[in-house]
Image 1 (cartoon, rainbow, N blue to C red):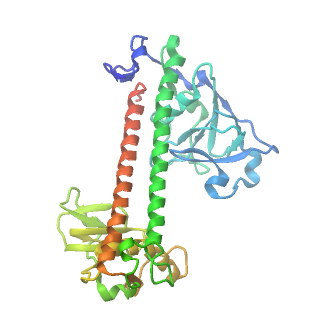
Image 2: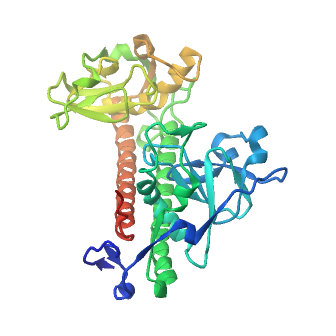
Image 3: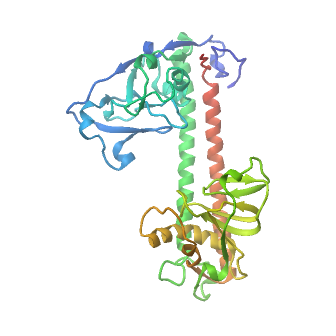
Length: 411
């Protein structure tokens, strides 16, 4: 597959066997699909919902229960390869999301926020159409029909006629199905690879979490369940509160102080890190959110120059018998559960300083701390490398989606 000369009716990338097949054309969706609106009534189908970027999921899978209620009788019935347009705006799909139903059991979606259609498989391959919508082809078309704030019953106000008039790019008739299939197979293979690499990432994270739990003593125990051979006969671990071996402070900055392209990391109440032009501290530290949705969830380790938000706690100036990165691994695993236990509720609005300073931490000899930190750091490196690999594959897919279909010009 190589780059061809750009043309409004020819994709930038085309498989070799189709380069001389002629120009593509646009056809209204109404020519290759028909709207469907059959209600389920009293029949029993699987009630579905949608997650943008992922697709249709059963309500049981997404919400842990069925939420259809009395409105179920008005749900629209779906068969395999039917498409459901969800008229809810998301950041990635501001004009709504179109999902293909790939299940084998008949399903149903709410008529209040979905418009559905069934492709003519003699004219268009469903998987091909599915990838086209992942590219947000429909959003480029529908945005001119959707006015800001135009919602009806919580959904974007989109007429079925405007949806069905959407131009769909198709290869020349003589090779249409074979070229569609080639594109679909290419993108399907990449999706399979992304799925496999995502599962590998999940496995690495689960392995690291399990290893972390075994390398630290459980509550009420004085030694971990997994100990390196050279420390099997070492003394039991001792408990010290955080304020016995470190200092805990908050910053003096606000989020608005961030500087794009700044020279130093700027830690805010988020797992992401901003930049700033000056630094307030130079050394080893562990940081966590003091309030907001990141309480007990966001943790950072750094050894260098940085600044931090006024509602971010910074634990620093570790005494010589404490290894900072060892403490980071223990703290990031155990602080969240401690906060929820101390506050006696599942979600916590803010952290009091004493929740940190009074927290007991089990400590072995500094040599064993370093061995544990080195082991877990290796696993972090594996996770980071897998995340980077997955990001590269997703970026590659986005590039292919942009180049395997002709661009839709809208006014």
